Length: 209
Picture: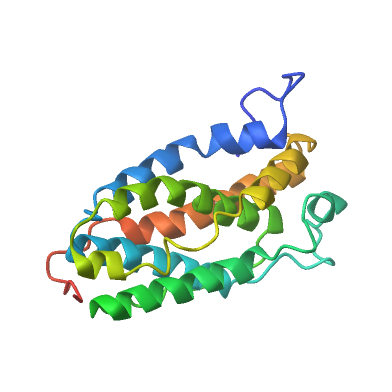
């Protein structure tokens, strides 16, 4: 995905991540927003879609140092103390616990992705935590005890400090070049993984609830 305006003097990778993924983000937000978080069936659909994505992301592989596309920009922009895939796996476990509490099944597993840039993984996982704080407020307004009992996912830490550190790092990275292109492509691959799980299923498929 080429940068729309690589000549912009003050543009950064953070800016490009925001602008070039906007369409996918809007589509994903709309798909997830269609689930009624106040009803057990709606909440189960939301949890199921996210579990499918986070489970696959947690099992995905990262770009190897010897890969021709690897560059120090990946290392410079990645906090060694933070592991986006580990957080994805933790969130998937929380989602499975909530589904079990609702008596709902998970979706069939999605295939893990391969050779992902750590920057792309961190962007999606940390960004999801930011978005979940808004959704959690809506979920807390539910009156159904079954819904409120499914609290593992929405009680996960927001990771605000890690998100702020990520934004600072990517604000210092170039928005153009092969490295930036690879990060954007991988980010879109991950977002499409989640979008595929959030879109309405074929009527012939069971609700699994």
